[in-house]
Image (cartoon, rainbow, N blue to C red):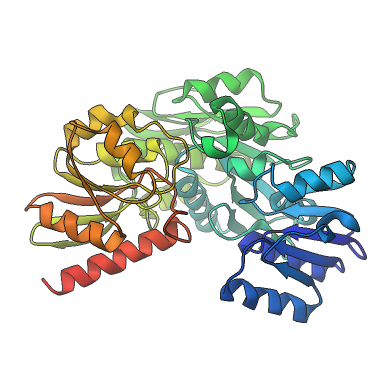
Length: 455
């Protein structure tokens, strides 16, 4: 698509908005960026873009956003019902408003593998990238995992494969975005603070398949009934994955081994599920999904085996930080919803000192009350959800309040004995106290490292 001479407004000056602005200026567009926040960091980004030729406003959104724009590009964190967007829709009902991921798709020459779901997205996308790396393919790991698609869209060739992690925020307003391979890992209630209902959240996720055709591939989990039922609704060629022996095109577990059935019908054993570099039944499913997404690109079984053995997981996801006096400290800051918290709790027995809490996305913490009672010796609660969690878990375990993460770690350490695990697995977003879950995880690691070094 030709953006030369077009006037494009961008809402949000985070990573996505910044990269979109830089890319559009490279394409010859006149760029206006608007962010309602203000900080020294944002001001530095704004100055850089102004020096490159863009116009930027900080601290508030004005009608300049839509008054003379040919198009508006929205960053993932910007809600669809934002006041300035509603104002734009009223004033100029035919003005195109698209998410950053749509912009990157329009511009790039590379093929898109889009992966979404409530849990496991980052692990699966990263493992898929390792498969392509082992196969010697040109690839990028981008999207909700941190690096925006717009950061790499222009440098891609037709042989480039973009492994794109996609959130419901990115998918809810797509127009023409069409992944050659689209995958939903699982579905469970999340982000109800933004989507209002579970159904609206699921519908946003399912939009990943909306523009596919018979020339594309739709990858579905057979472990999740809500995802499995989509098999009759998608337009692409169906590829399946799961922990059970499906015997169909895709990747599944047969006699304890990850096994793939390729597009030609060949059945090939890959690795024993116990030999994966990422342990746990949830990661067996993630690994099967990554292999299934690679099948349309005819990647060799050897490349799959290399990646499956060598990939050891991600920062902030069940990351072992250190041990002191027989107490293990684990960073699971990426657990931003109930299902992720459940996975973390099931990874240990009844020896957990849990640090939980944060920004409330509308989750029902009573759903995990029984598991908490079974496995959590004490829960140290932080953030705006502390009251809600304490009420949900009253009588199930000992609860202690902390005003900061550092205080929470110190309290957890004092309540932990030899053989216990101090587990940061918040079950909540981080926005009430931190920039993002990475910031929360890194602060946890730093606090633990200081604590360990003085003991």
